[in-house]
Length: 237
View 1: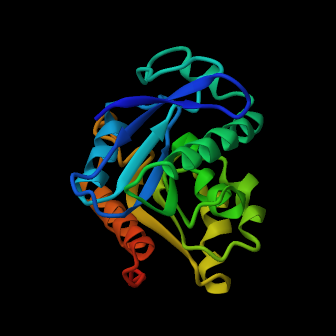
View 2: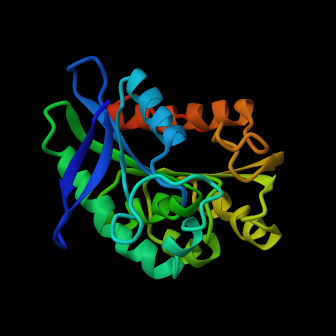
């Protein structure tokens, strides 16, 4: 699948990995907000998997303003390019909006998209439906989530947030803050997996990767995206 260039509303342009379904039929889209390592093989493989299920998948380079491109997990440039965290995430909102705007030019796109974030990109699962025009949001092992709990207020779109209970980036205060949310917001799912570490979605993190939990997370994502296709949404039991 190709890497394309998307014009930025702030000037310049950024790379975006785009995976298209084989069918020309109208389809929903998912925009993947990457971990701090960027659009690496793990994320491209997730995009390709969505495309194989008939979903348009786009993965923009959210770090093009500082250190562009994918980095290895041990690269010393990974942490600095995501700091200061909150301003960097704010700047990336424009990229998520510009990516969605580009998808609207594709003849296959049905006009409905979900934002799906991983680690650093997790907060876009809330920000996307809150104010960027996304119809749903999903997060897998997202970080910085205490700062974004208030952002859930007023969100009526489906949101699915998933962590392992051994995730060092989501300590007990984060999990305790989010566990009660579905009781007051039926559009929000929170799944916390026993014994699962940070980075469970990514085979490139072999110490954390868990194929069963990854499979469940992809199932939930595809179910929510099915709702954007027109099929009924179904909640996990």
